[in-house]
Length: 143
Image (cartoon, rainbow, N blue to C red; front, side):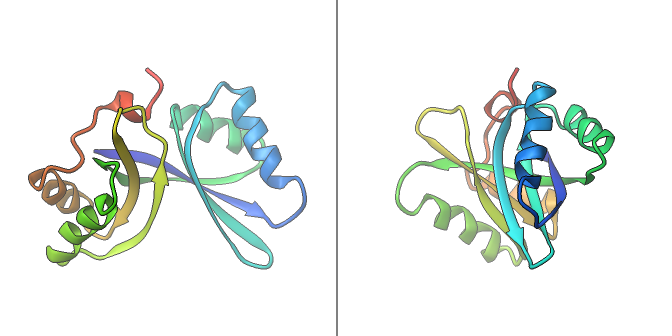
């Protein structure tokens, strides 16, 4: 399933990450997933939330630099090799993955991950054909 991800640019200063998550909480936005890549001066916080448009607006109004990007959420059996199997499907179809991280899901017995492939629609299609990614918006978003 193609979903919206927010990429938030965070200054590498004490309290900045807490401020961002507090802004989301104050706007009743639930975080399903987050990954933070940092450098000396700033970090890129990638988050999946239940209300991406609300989160975008709230963070922008708070003076935070934010970008919305499409990514693919993939459901797999929550067993050893689940992640490997899904990533092998993408690799065997010669689709490059820019990054990947785990996501909290609401589907019993399934693990979720978020991938940012170079070919979004094709990656989603090959994963679906292989039996991965059969999830609904309720698995990611609070509905």
